[in-house]
Image (cartoon, rainbow, N blue to C red; front, side):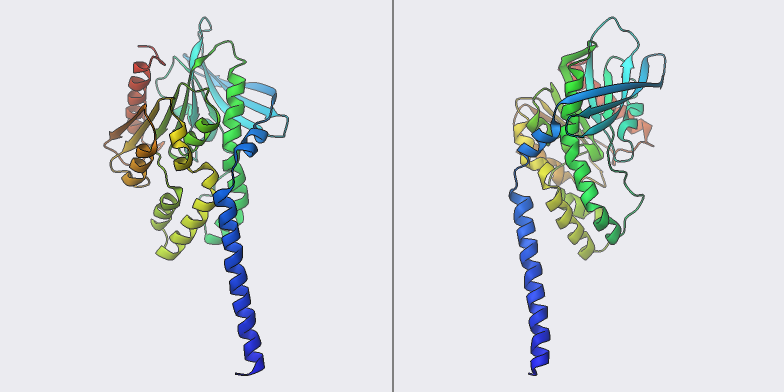
Amino acid sequence: MRSGTRRILYVILSTALSLVLACAILWLYFYTKDYEEYFSERHGLLTSSSLQPNGGDEFARRFWLTLENDVGLKVDCGMLVPRDTTRRYPVIVLMGGKATGKYAVDYALGIHDAIIIAPDYPYEPRTSYSILGFLSDVPEIRQALLDMIPAVMLLTDYLWQRNDADTSRIVLLGYSFGAPFVPCILAHDDRFAVAAMVYGAGDLHSLITHNVRRYEGAAISAFVGSLGGLLLRPVEPLRYVDRIAPTPFLMINGTEDEQIPRPNAEVLFDAAREPKKIIWLESRHVHPNNPELTRKIIDTLRSELTERRILLD
């Protein structure tokens, strides 16, 4: 073998080994890193809040709420507040789908006896993704997702300052895109009376792989699933779901959900500790353009929250 050929093979082999080593180090770092301190420091201290009226209806006033803390975290929210100011209300902290964010308050159909507050997502998803587009957005996506944990903790601090909020009856509710955050938040903040995941599940690696596979080939979906699962491991529901207890944990899922495979929901429920409950509705995945399913979910939630004396009959 010529010396020039040997050198080329040596460079290729060295590059490949370096890449494998770098990936192994990256995997080890994200897999083992403890984010407790990061979430605590990023939570910081609430320094300012501002409310901007934004309409409403005969039952509730609608606001845009902005919160800021002492380490530069800014949280934008939508909020519905009942017009009757003579009593204190339970609060539903609502983390909705990726396309709704703070506008999720507009889908709280028929809930007039609670304060509804929905934090916005600091990352604006693209309408579609190429592999290069996804990879270029990874750092921003990851930072935004990690910030959802301290953002909700800061929002809960704000609720403690409101005279109309009954802080013994705060519900953390995540659905679809917002559901996976619920266990991580509860593991770092025990001020909630009930934790609920609607059309959510665990094992983000297989969940991402499944959803990418609906549009891409096996190799691409496996790559994106592995990368996504690794980068999102700090909020992986399976890491935290056993720490929700003793707060009651409720899951609502669809029997024909094309985005959330039933095994992913069941593995998360099985990993949770009592008290817990899972309810199966005959439906596909929840969607803002399906008001009939939204109403069915809300009726189910109201029944469960009434049974737990969070909402009144």
